Length: 124
Image (cartoon, rainbow, N blue to C red; front, side, top):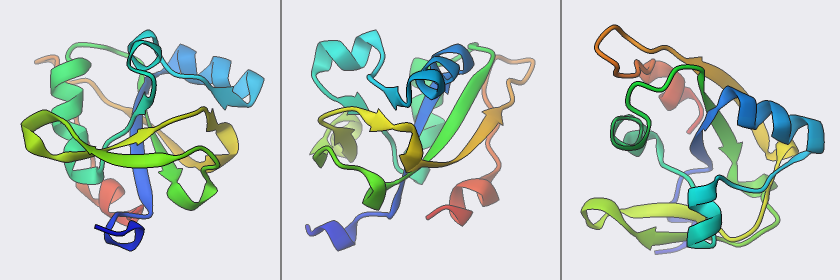
């Protein structure tokens, strides 16, 4: 699979406070989970809802970062993860300048996040 086979935009779910801290410093270094694994976890548009349900259920003040792959300096690798799917993993830091859109992710009464499908499609 070549780079052109992958989407030009990848996504990161992040707590609002963590993003504000990254904005202040100009770089996101990753969560404790990312640091433990040695890379920053991202998702494709199709993977975002399941990622939210599995790792962020019930978490308020969540943001969805739309990240331009071409703006990344660190190596990005698509590696097999959940359900045998390829997920984007960034082996380095995420510069704030690579994020071209940030949107709040609403939390419904059932603790699940709601995504605007057209929003995820527009950024591909």
